[in-house]
Length: 73
Image 1 (spheres, rainbow, N blue to C red):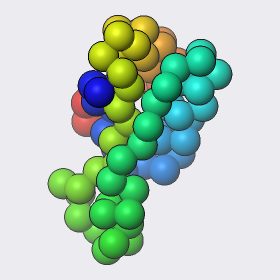
Image 2: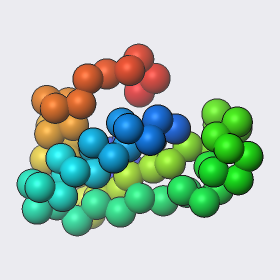
Image 3: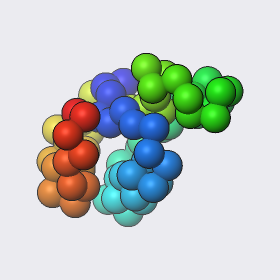
């Protein structure tokens, strides 16, 4: 699995999940519970989206195209 996005922004995370799911990619989100433990107050613990290695290039391309950069990646 390859990480294609990490963020604490729930809107950004949800939109990215939707883009990847609609493209038929097998994305999984990790660290949701850990990032939420302190109400998102720990910026170094972010939610991450991972995809299989063979889908990583397509996922990165889609996110670059449809998800505006927030400057943190």
